[in-house]
Length: 180
Image (tube, rainbow, N blue to C red):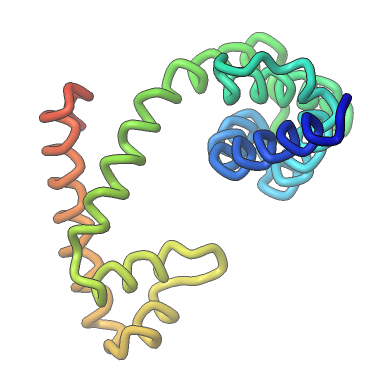
């Protein structure tokens, strides 16, 4: 493989992983009961994706290909999860994987609608919502960063959740994505 081709391939891989890592993680997390195990499996899956990227056919569905790799990593790791309190048998695991795959398109549409609706919020309100749902954050941190009292933050978040729900429902109805 030429150096130029290898560089282009690496750039394509990085762009695809950056764009779709959250979707791949969401797929894994639907199949694995523990967040830390899901994060470990995402890392393992990412390594395999890098190793096998030359087998990926450009123009095909990268997420579906990556989720297939994740599926096999999860199957391989099942012995580790057998000691957990919640263990899914293969039929349940396959059913959840199928459902996650079929819901991916709908979730992508909802995610795009939510991103659009978040952009319509005032910057202060958008920051409050994003801080609230930031990993490791909560209402107290969102209130502190926005200069609101806890009571005001709770009230604002309730109002903003309803506003965002209505906006997403409207966006999906007008894009043909259905209604919530």
